[in-house]
Image 1: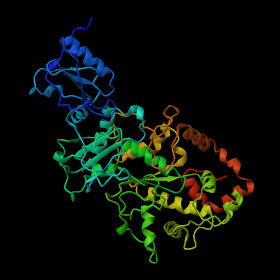
Image 2: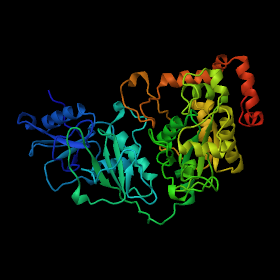
Image 3: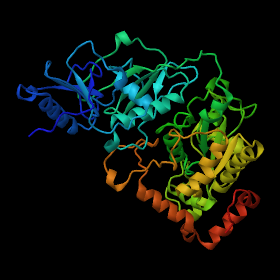
Image 4: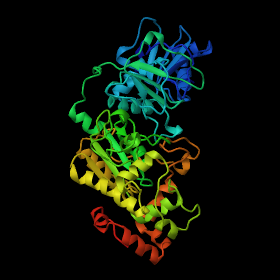
Length: 489
């Protein structure tokens, strides 16, 4: 016996549907009803409801006996149902957890996209025309439902001043924004591998290209991550992008050049500096300076430092330098000149240590840390100094990273979010994609825990001989060590 028809149905349908749709990656679709399924309203509703319950993206259904149609929707504005085609009833099948803005976007979205965008280019949210937003950072495929993805994309769009149109494809992990789009000429190359939805976001006033962002917005919409090699720049960049959105600037994937850095307008480090001196500003490992030119201007620098002891061990394993001896022991490495290979990196060293480069790795650490500390101490609102050792718990991240950023105007993508999310791959997510801004590398939960234990226990000290520790002590700036909270061993 069929259950009684839904007592609180609404007359009308949500929006037109033209195809079956994909139950994971579409916002709507439709199924035909058989002759037996339209014998009564109870039969039609039961058949359509069962199809909806088997479709993860389905929240609402509009069904018709006359048209033998069962249309499904991820979201529906039931206060504005269409009645131009009669004979439809609409009901809610699953709890609708979407916020009103998300529901409106999903209900109005049309199939297609404006034009291609590049996954590694966010675009200039103050003056640009298009780009991709990082809605999928830290998101496993198991959470790729339309309500969640659309909410993430809309939150990111809200922090991008020129975002007026959104094109979303959970299947392709694509969330693209556009300042302009001809909705009558959408690309509709939809296959089972690519499903995109796009819609005009009403109520958004598009700023003029020359208009400056309000100071309150700039204070959190332009955060720059910088640090030396092996200080956690990739992890912190992924962490902040996941929680703060496109406000965060830095280097993406295997690229070491910061986004938004104006190569043509960078100051020279010295009067005799080569053209590559611009990379002092634009490299994520370059020395931080308030004189560097970015679009939009950087409001807050997040500068990373690390204990020289664990840093030296990581550097010995992978130094990015010109090794005097390819298989040098740790003792030999500590006592050899530290020379970086490329012209770009040599300019950094020349500014830090002089034209001849750094005499030892410790001299390089002294110089880089001194620059970061000076910027953090010299401008109360311009920079925060974050130690590598403080990255390995949510409690510590809230205290040393997110609280200082919030004090400077930063806001989480989700205002009610109590805890920062970590861009980690758990054991249950094995094999699933996570974007983490480092080529061929995954931030795993296990590795995060392992590195945290090492940092807290300082177990790495056992790898140094007493002679090594004495040598390091002579090379280090002990005043600088104390200023950043490190102990000299």
